[in-house]
Length: 376
Image (cartoon, rainbow, N blue to C red; front, side):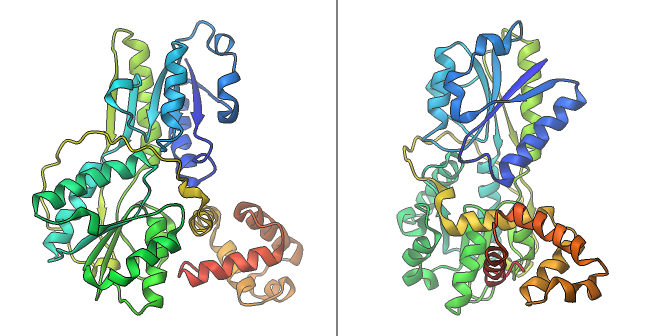
């Protein structure tokens, strides 16, 4: 079986997309299916008749933005090509053959119940991207949650228009009105922690901070973040299962799956135990239209690069980075790391490529940024 895979251009260079592709590749290999990666920049010019041959005209599409994904779906529908979407939920009128996404409603419901059980009532949403299908699902549920309690959702939501610093600037005058925050993702949360620290707002004493995600930087930052996990590899695996099911059942119009989230409690909520027991509600899709690109924010982009770097670094790499950050030369590090200067130079070049730093000065500047954010 052939499984073509297409990833939204703005999404594909980051760890979330890479983890999703890992899940696709692992499950496909386990089932002895063949995968092929398509060029998202040129997907409208691909010869699909030649690509599919005698195979079913169906592919997997990975992405999140409401400014790109619906156009891709419309294109494939117009050419009688079925699609299985990962991480995006379109409107009911233009459903793909399959959808796999996180159970965002269950996750935000769990976070709200947990924070409420901790005595937190003045809860804000932070860093939400109106161009993200996932964020719009969370926002819709949160708005209904506020409405049912007589709160104004507008006063509690702080949007990220591809500028996390500006997002905090809007929240800053009112930050002490809240006792808890749910961040759209752990990138936004790490950024928020650094701003709060600079303003003398203590986490968790003054403010509980939670987020969606499961990154290394969420666990390394001080205090470590309480998170609702997002298992992107499982998303990819489930997409292959849906793809296989649809191929075996050609009469099936559409099928969907949600990947459950787990709550990991850490220091950003004072390690207060999760005593909640909730019933997960149903939700529907949002229909925001926007061209806002979360990845255009330099701060978010550097935090995403930091996550990629930390994911690829072993213990010796981390000691090398710490030494470079402390101003040590490779010759001096030879004595403490027990490697030759040439071996250390090789490791440094590899880490620079992963961090997308062209020069040593760029790497040092990047490492200083990571230190300021509490990651190194």
